[in-house]
Length: 258
Length: 258
Image (cartoon, rainbow over all chains, first blue to last red; front, side):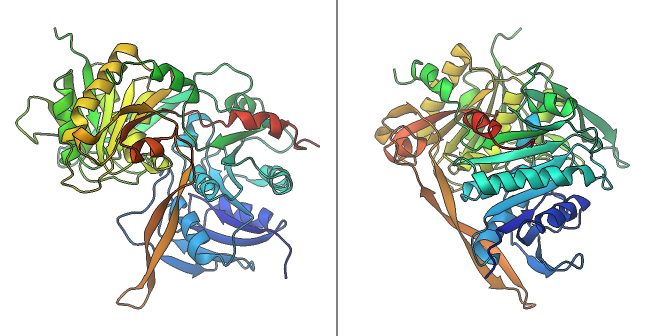
């Protein structure tokens, strides 16, 4: 029987994306790999799940590797739920998601399908990591990420992660020689300055495209944005207890029951 | 000129849902109301946003009230972005989302379209509250929620909220007489024990329906689940800094740069 760890691989760009193909190739050097990923791109899906519709899963072969791969009609979170409950014959030792084509640093974690898959695995008690490269191109060069992914993954398998914590890893869009190393960070305070592109349809009706400009509101040097801007790989421990514990005391002083 | 607060109302069950109609009626007693809500149900959408498609907005009249209402083709988070950036002529003083038909307590906050709208407003620096009733029925009775919504909303307008914090309010599914009051809580540790209902299509292909059983893993009496089970309205302060700050020190000891 294999003593290798069982690694579930998923993403939000779809099962044929170059990012997940890179991630699969790295994971195959570490463990036994099963892929359950969306059949089409799911970027910006946040932590969506499919409640009012059916889910379809198909066993597929994308490259000539020996890993089992399943293409799923659902969201990244659906893929993780289905993999753990229906597809895998034992609990995975690790779930990795990505490599996303584009940043999931700072506030982007909230909108991220890549991270929703990692968080879903975390909710199920499985150590999980989301990987993203700051390059939105389909043909982005993922070479520089490989050795860092291996290092971080091996550390997670060796050390484990705290209960209810998963990792959000982002790579700067620079060559391997320029990367300075790995930095453990906090999520930067940031938002998007939305600019809607308002247009008229051929029928004369208004419609909009969402566009925007990312604004880093955080001058701290301990943030993921700082790390990435300065050539580091950022690692942020992410939790899904959203309670703002510091606010509880304040709210308890309010006149809510008078 | 009106000195009333400007209140943006949205939800994830769609603009015609009884829950949002109740919320609008309460908010009209407190301020000037503008409604920007999805044209169709968006439950389980998490913090999805529309990146690869167009957004359509239509001014609509649902009841005979004097509030402006806009029906939007996007997700709850899209509605808030569009409202703030394109529809409203000044920044709202408050954003309220709901009343959701169904619970958004504990881990449900992660999957919640209702809360994603509140969080989106929070990211934009606008005080925000999500309201949910523990009754999934379209014809749920929202009467008991009204006075509590008014109390909580007025407290938020008077006291403000800490930076980057929004409120997640859930109502037990009991009559007004039975509600014991309002409790400030933390998010309970919980998950869903998924059970996929596997079926065969008329064409002989497997497909799945996602079903599941909610499991409260938390025995604490300071949680939202405890409050709701014991007849209280739960109020959880929610943050969108997902950093697991306690884990940073541990991760810094890992051998990531050897």
